[in-house]
Image (cartoon, rainbow, N blue to C red; front, side, top):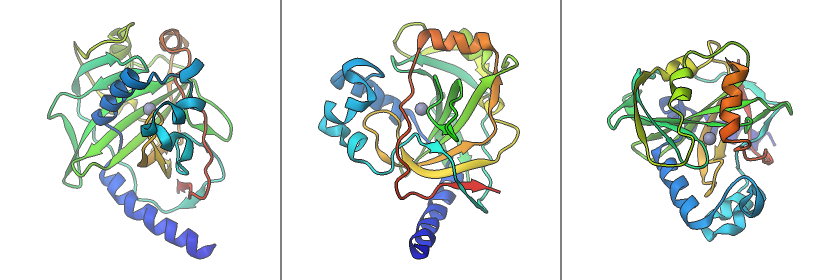
Amino acid sequence: MIDRVSLSRRTLLACGLAAVACPVCTGVVGTSLARAEGSHGWSYDGEGAPEHWGSLSTDFKACDLGLEQTPIDIRGATRAELAGVAPSFSPMPLKILNNGHTIQANCEPGSRTVINGEPFDLLHHFHHPSEHLLSGKSFDLELHFVHKSAAGRLAVLGVFIQPGAESAALAPIWAAMPKEAGDEQAAGVTITPGDLLPADRGFFRYHGSLTTPPCSEGVLWTVFKSPIEASPAQIRQFAALFPVNARPAQPLNQRLLLESL
Ligand SMILES: [Zn+2]
């Protein structure tokens, strides 16, 4: 048991460096979303609902058979000394699309975050309600900052959003939110993604997957403990477009779930 845990922790920390070097999930994900939607009709209800994803395509087997799937119910984490997460997201022109599954904000080509000398392309998107649970509790929204390194490593930063003050950082994204699925649009405004991060950077860390088909594993997850706020009206505006776009929690299985000190 101890051997397994220490081995897992070594593995996790090794990847943790990559992840801290690379906060995580990307445009590649957007591409696979679009492709998956076109060919296999996955969704969040009916015949394409999450419990059927694994049988919609042989490419989606990991959704059923994977043992390291995301999201999870975050509870009972092991406290550990982890390298801090310090995203440095620059202001960027908002390029936004409704891909039929969520609202996604893309970076300009060449707009990247360089961490430890390695560039990571960034995009972010939203889920309603939250995909991760915190000790069984769901939040109204969850924001995912998806990054991909040149080496193809994926890492996602997850931020819970709870009702409270109106979010000035979300406002330009919400104002430009396309009501129908379609191609990327330039919104003609600048956004500051860093303003969507919580001030308290304490986080949970584990190895997981994409939360949409093909549910590929090998994704390093960092979920911040502290939520940010959005007004009830902002939350309702997203929920009106996407009543549910969250995959249910998956079993932790043998994975180590760490919590920063
Ligand atoms: Zn997501």
